[in-house]
Image (cartoon, rainbow over all chains, first blue to last red; front, side, top):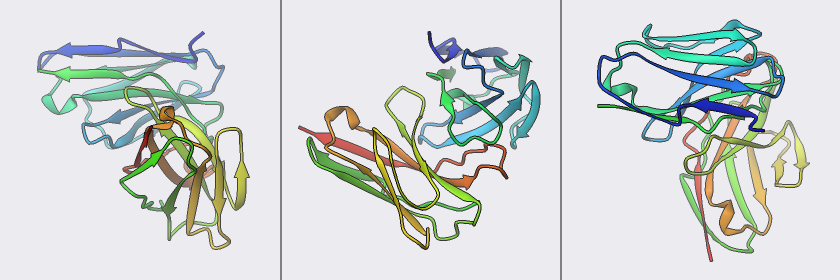
Length: 113
Length: 112
């Protein structure tokens, strides 16, 4: 009964490929997020959706496109992958859009070769 | 957004009380102080949040002085499993839409 799940856990791919990471939460939360954690362990928010509506869109290359088919799912699609995209991507959710208590998934380690 | 400063690393021994202090000199009136814990290869986990004075839960205590320019996370009687990175975050609940700003964190190492 995992609260926030992500697939895949590991993703190794070549430069230029397109890949997707899926996230699902079974907590009944309204808000979901995508974060990127680089090799220096800095964690930065990328996107946030509240009830399928985009509410946070940080300065992220257009190659990254989030999609929320319903409020329990938030997927991240990345086009034309670059070496610098290698990182751990975390999905998170919170009950409401204004909550500082967020529940994080286990992360997806993306390696671009 | 208020900037936070915390020690990069700390060492402790099992059974000791660990206090991690975070400085946030330009904290705003609406800002809350939130602490997260992250184990290797896992996502961050919410520990505690407070606005002023003292907050305690089953995991930790959070001490916030009257001027709110700093805060101290207190972990009682740490064990090896408390080895993790601890992040101090400062931000408003209602005016940032849940945008958490993580700093570099404090890497706590608990030794036997």
